[in-house]
Image (cartoon, rainbow, N blue to C red; front, side, top):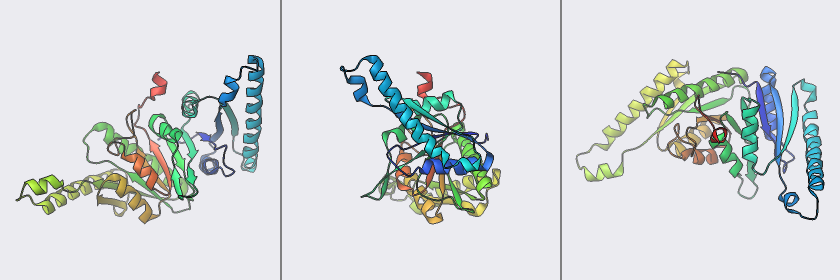
Amino acid sequence: MKEYQKLLVVVDPTSDKQAALARAVELASKNKAQITVFLSIFDFSYEMTSILSSQEREAMRLGVIEQRTAWLNDLISQYSHLGLEMKSEVVWHNRPFESIILHAIKGEYDLIVKGTHEHDKLKAVIFTPTDWHLLRKAPVPVLMVKEHDWPVAGKIVCAVNVSSEDEAHQSLNGVIIEHAKDLALKFDAEVHLVNGFPGTPVNLAIELPDFDAHSYNETIRMQHEQRVSALANAYGVNASHCHVKEGLPEDVIPEVAEELDAELVILGTVGRTGISAALIGNTAEHVIDSINCDLLAIKPEGYKSPLEEE
């Protein structure tokens, strides 16, 4: 896989702590990657006021951009001792996700890194509309950063889909594992594979009195275990690091990640209308809300962002 040589870090102007920038610096330090610290801003009041002339409105906009650029440069200066190539970019745009994705495409970035918001009262992470748009529409991998550290000898969990014979899904499994292996090498981490399989359909058990639900379940389990094992074997993942459990992906993946105290969950996202493929339908959205570690969302090779096509 192509290494992350160019990182686009989306900062949070409402927070003093920039977890995404700290994580990006960690990643960049491993292979001297370039970092662009990015902020998309917009104030509708500047566009609407009729008291000011267009020149005055433009001057105000430029003033805000300069102020924010200085703030970003202050953030960057905290890491100057590391000798990394870092720069700032402030863009005036009324749709943050669009400006981030278009900038990532134009600058040929390898990874978008963004922090998540924590709801103080609920003690839960809240994903903003910008987060969802990035996960669905960004053509490059998106790393959503939480407050979980990445210690040495940590664990990286790959959510793989082995229930489909579709070539795109199988190829995506490989891309996910390759990303995991590359990061595991840099951070001296373990790679784990996780897969959830569906239990016996209730209607079958009710409608067919002779139906053997236990045998059916065991057959499905074995089939999934064999396929996950074959994947592990093909990519040199330790057989003891395969986790196959009965249940929906949105339940199984967070459960295994918590059991392992994982630092990172990697999953695949396909399709422009929602997160799917590696996870059926939009269940990835439930997975993301439930895990207490970083999440790396990866598109299949050849994916084109709908923004790119517009």
